[in-house]
Length: 148
Length: 421
Image 1 (cartoon, each protein chain N blue to C red):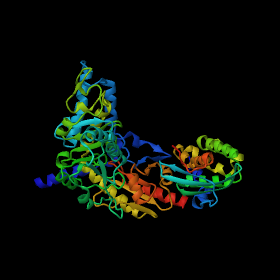
Image 2: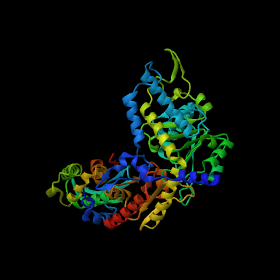
Image 3: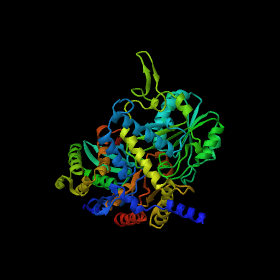
Image 4: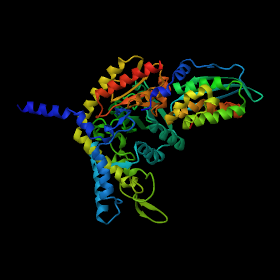
């Protein structure tokens, strides 16, 4: 029997109730919207990108505990990271939530979301913000990401 | 003395022995995480009794053959069973003749059939189709596509505000004019459970010469529906929501309409004669059933109709009303629960949210205790917009559900509150 507490760990509940960087970033030079049509989750990512480094990042939106916590923890992890480092993070995170294979040294706190791989329907909740950051970085103009 | 006997017979027919009913459903014998499965998502689909599964097996093991073609005996038997199923469905909704029953892939396809075969040939600029804000997407999109192709206009009867799960029927007078060619309306809401006053709406539509299509996907499985008493022009429903197999649905339409309508799809079976230049069409209903039909599914649906008749539709409805009253009371007394919809006539569907918990998180936590509910927009995004929520949780009941399962639902909600709030 798989315990639901493996999925809803305290850190996830804390971030979903009190998300970090949950604000509009005034001096953002990149932003993108993400949309999960299946459950109506919406997220807007704001980025301040300078010389390929994510100087600052924030988000707004509404969603389930998994999507909110994933977005919140992601923002705390990406500050100061280069675009290339983001890509590495993205790949390792995606692998974790789809297969359960965790590289906790690289992922740090994000490893708390490894339980998601047990629930394939929830992978989209956990990855929506990541896809949205990718879109914001790729072309900088507002773009709708979906997890479809 | 006679009166007493009659009463006792009536009482018996109203009684559903739910434990006995449950034994007819193999899936309900399963456990998940050590708990029996509480299937509370019957507005999405329903479980199948053994008699339906046996019927599918019987078809494939004893008389699997194509229908209306074969000269050999199993082909004849397949045809007989397929047409018997049509007769059973016809009787079930009191259609005047089995030829007015078209087997489709589902309720969605049945609406699309009308939108193409009737809509594309009868609508022109200036004409209006009237639907409601309460519709499932399957009764919105086909009409949006039809007006795009024909230049007709799509109008809506809005939800009553503040939202109580009913329609703003006062707007009927404004919206229903001699430009209205069709009123397409949901019989019972898949979000609120509201049973709309369709008889009144049909009368009003007839007074301006408009046709009426009823989306009865949520009503036919749960109560006695009589197409002749309603006097609707089209009525659609799906087989899998009434214990039948997936992949079969039904369009009922008045005979004169079916005879005047163009075919939906072209192919085998639906023709009378074919030359390289032109073809003529088969009689109804076969004119609308191109290609090899969903034979096994239709025969399975016939078995489901037999099963429902045996339980008695009035008894099913009474059992569900009791469950619905109980669920409403229990959920009202569960902390943080916000209920949506309180129309006076409702089927066994209840939509709600738990303050501070997203429906997906709630459904996930309930699932751990073997409780299956739906979380999402229920293919009714205009309603979600009116409720100003991204999604709701929905519990929907059928004849095999119990009060104990509702208790478990409420316990599960409290567990989710303890975990997440």
